[in-house]
Length: 588
Ligand SMILES: Cc1cc2nc3c(=O)[nH]c(=O)nc-3n(C[C@H](O)[C@H](O)[C@H](O)COP(=O)(O)OP(=O)(O)OC[C@H]3O[C@@H](n4cnc5c(N)ncnc54)[C@H](O)[C@@H]3O)c2cc1C
Image (tube, rainbow, N blue to C red):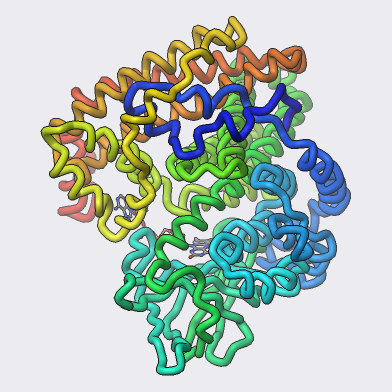
């Protein structure tokens, strides 16, 4: 991350406010966007050393990573080396033997490991972002003292066990059960699917149906060594092949009372808080992957000659490289803004975190596609890095919440407050938002409070403090926030309580919010860099301008499509395909 101007101090930040929710009321919450947050001195110092040792450790291993991808495993000695480097203790407080990195610094570390190999990031990331994050967020002092030192040292590797064969996006459908015994212990039975680190983990955060009076799902801390815990074989995957993915099963596993994580019956709250808090790890990894592709592709473009010239001379190749850089800059700006929210104690950042996951994962997939395209036929060959990167990137839009589910979450959670403010639909909307997506309804609990009282606290002076060339860009987002607010109100008035079934409309709302939030983060970061004199390091204004113009075209299209679209035709075609189960329009 670049050095920036003075940080937006935590006191300026409105920690109980969501930028995305304000946007759907037509307002840009300046305090939470400007100036762009600077990296702390402490992070800067520790990051320097960590990144240097990561580079030293991973840079000579390209052939190993390729071999381990084919063999679909990371050797035990390599995991030992990750332990020795301290990479399992990144986010664990120093008091427990970890490095105590902030969320921002942690995301930066994952972006560095992802430049070399995604499976390495997965092994470290599944441990820190989701495997033991629940213990950090919800663990008692006793639980932390018992487990964190071993987790920090990597003596215990952690995994997160939510998904089951019948419960993927619909996490409410889990069938694993935990029954409370007379002595206060629990008996755990069931099977979890596709668990990252499943084959190497010693510590599982497990979600089970408990049906206690306090709620339906409870989170447990479970040790792999306990009787009744078993794991299946390593899954043969498309990408991130060397990272461990297995089933994990529990057969009459006795869980002591002291291993309930959080409150009994509040397991969904725990699961969603972990996933929200961990999203910047995935975003950081995607940013690192994009940087790696950009380096490979630009080198190839300069070396490869066709028609007597380097292909880097051709406009269509240059366009791809520029787009990758713009996407990477935008994703990086948004990911580290959200990391700053988390580090500053924000409580209402889940929509913005979901936005960064959606944007960064899709930007990474576009970069993997275009990087391979620039390399041409050689990009398709396994000796080059592109095909593995394309395979590895494919998972990013699927796990930690599919991008479809996250778009619905972004839209519904942001619309909730708009709905509540519309007197004539208030009651109907409030009722459905208690369960916005069947089985995913728990997420609505995270949607924040109404904004009416908060709008009065909004800072409106930030526009005048912005570097002058960026002011027209900010105006684009301000105009489109107003347009989005009008469109959101229209959509809600039109569909009322039927809004949850209007997925194409919700997708448009989410896409406008993604462009608004990512674009504003991009402008904020460009502002900080220009004012700190870093604009000279590259065409920062140009990148912010490109993103804004592209975003404006997308936003105009999405807002317009909220009232005029071909949704009924799309639905008719889908219905025909589903009815026949095939394509029925052969030429012959
Ligand atoms: C390599 C890998 C590693 C994983 N690691 C872990 C892990 O460590 N821990 C863990 O608990 N899980 C893990 N998972 C599981 C992962 O989180 C799930 O695959 C993901 O949540 C999606 O669930 P699903 O695969 O059952 O897809 P489904 O839920 O069946 O979805 C299939 C498709 O339907 C769409 N869809 C579903 N419902 C809706 C809806 N209401 N509206 C619109 N579209 C919808 C989805 O977006 C998707 O496109 C992992 C998966 C993989 C492949």
